Image (cartoon, rainbow, N blue to C red; front, side, top):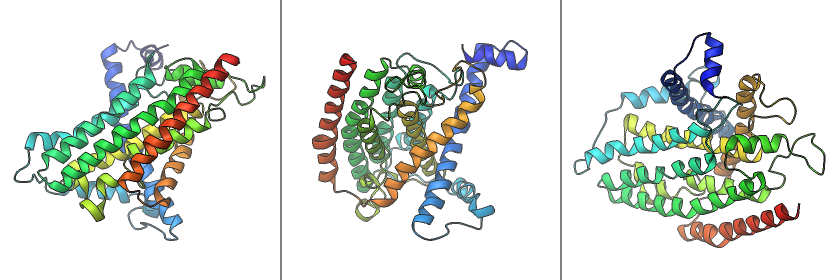
Length: 350
């Protein structure tokens, strides 16, 4: 079932394809800043404050709930500055490329049996492919800024993202082998309808059998987001602010939304791949009620995964560049290959 018949049934009118597409794109366009606000407030402002025994922002709105909105308005009011020797076109487009990369990931993330923009047979392959486009925007920002610190940050980011794309993809391969599909909706169904030693009480969430892949996925996501302890591309103590150093106003805001929007998207992918996504291991997965309950179920699981991502961010100190590369090439990639082999063997045996 596609979204067009569902919308037509709800509205009691025939909804053309172009209108459905516009509605879907509009929903995603609203989800990205909303996701950035949710993660930013819950984890960056409040959870981190709790971990450091302080209150965090309290003045803008109840318990500081409007602080990020106030910051956003502040950024919009700031002057849009271009460095004198910058390539103005490339400099201006770089934050958009990063944000578009984030936007494209949400296209295939399902939150219900019909609540998905596009159900692709190669959904997870598509999601990982478009997520890697952000490195192009980061390189554009570093090169076009005409600033040596920005260029160093862009090159660091490129080396880091290329290194951690491999364990990210390989971590997902175990799930793909076990589910027998690249379609994210079918991966959700495989977990909801699966069994553990003949018992189907909780289905078969792949985190139980792919816990190694889940660990590798989270570490690789941390590096993809350039968050501590993998924040060398924006290290203030070494390269001032990296590829973002020359950006002001709304263009810097785009980088912020891209980072936290991507964090939400990766957490959603982890929830789909390892925690069963929007489904529950009982009930009819095709029932319309899951289009309402599914987003709520997904949000709970996404926040659980995001808690791990940000706990990691707030806990560990920054790695050296050689330590970062050694972790990817000498530990995560070999471990992910072993996980693939073991998964393949058990798939054949069982």
